[in-house]
Length: 484
Image: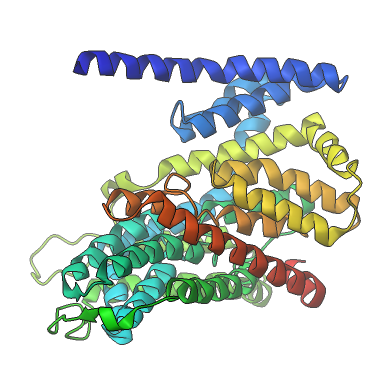
């Protein structure tokens, strides 16, 4: 039986792999015939192939991201040199530096100490507990991946379950798990390195508009958005709270008992981290003051370099000296995301050079909807619900070049549609398979159902839509310098 099941799995995988190029060829042929643009066949074929493999995950997503290196030169879309250059985009190195910093924080458990400190401050009452876990998860997700954040916070949340008693305790456990999943997605949008779509937007903004979104500029948008949505999420999960039928008895557990004491290595990590954040926030002023080209990527790489230079403290003086981070530690680095970025930038370059972006833009504008605010809402809604079904990186890679071109065609700010679309792409709250944090909490709970996640997630999606539209309209109407 096991052999038959394994054979069936291999067959289905092989079918999914074949369906990519087959469906892509059919769609590309029909598209080129209907639009009377035979020159669009190569880029349509390549794009649809990548999209199908990204959605079906017939092969790992980073492997799919390598397709442009094979298809673009072979189909005469772009030469190999131009295609390969996309994989070395500045944003790739910004994220690489951020990954290395996050790796250091995880290695020395700075993230755990931070979470425990927040929980120690918020207290152990049920609503305070929900608030503490939400704040800790969102704060950590600003700097390390939402997957790693959720995996770290989940055992801490489960460890308090036995101390929550009463008839309403099962409902509280559900809401606490949902808070972890939702907070990790919300916190990630606050910074450029918090979630990959933000960095993809930054790279495409430079590529298509020449506008460089600085770290501080993005935080001026992302932090208020994340803060407002986190508050609304907390209010949502706190509704219909049966306080009479729930009680907490921690008996001074470790997490709430003594204040957190940082060791020497944790303090060194925090010092490097603060130094890097300061560089990101004040990079433009430092650049003008020193008359040096200080970019976010260079700051990230300097911070990462310090991890390999600053020595680790060890209580035994005779112990062999080594740096805080060693190359062997990078085995756990998310190298696949780096390739995903490169593939996304290469695909965007191919779409631009082939004229496909302009054709798609003309098609959108031919629908007769010219009101920019209505278009912003429609694009945001599309991204919000499409991200429940597909990778947010793939979604942003495909949508952002088109909406940037649409904004430029209408004479609007080039990022008028792109910023809300990018924010919406990270708001996947409804389904377990929509995002890794959702899948992690769902797979580790017998009581959490798809209905629970979908019902709360749908409302949170609508709240997210309202908040991002308000924030983006304020930015473009009142603070246009933030994105110039």
